Length: 212
Image (cartoon, rainbow, N blue to C red):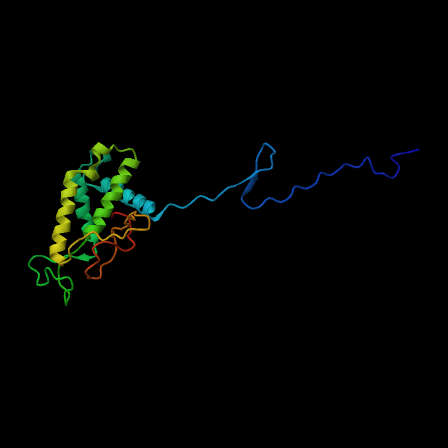
């Protein structure tokens, strides 16, 4: 009696097809059946992106310096020079002492006074560059962005702009739930156009970060 008769026992047995895996899921090699979801990488925050652009801008400024400067030779004086260089891209009207609108927060007509970087923009910029310096291997004790001369310069800019614009600078930060103070994100205008307005004393508009 032929037990294999008509049974098809000599035909290869096809293994069952694996069930489809959900998108982004992987099965562990140990065969336990547990799955892990591979989350997509998170994009950098707005602060981190701005910090990277500021850092690249400063490095480009050093390479274009006459004579070129290396980061290891950069001092607080060079940082101040960099801040003064950025004034040409500012959008904040700062009245000269001889201007008829000196000390007026809302002048009734345009004047020929220069546009500058607002103190709030420069202060935030220095904070980002100070952090970037140490994140790129710099030692805190030789951080040129934390130099006393830089802090004094920023204080002078704050006081002079407050007098020229008639707008005292006061800390007005709203505390979030839980008692924490949110960090301020302020951009520096580099390469932007000017509209002759008074500016806002802090935030800048979509800066380009190339140094020409």
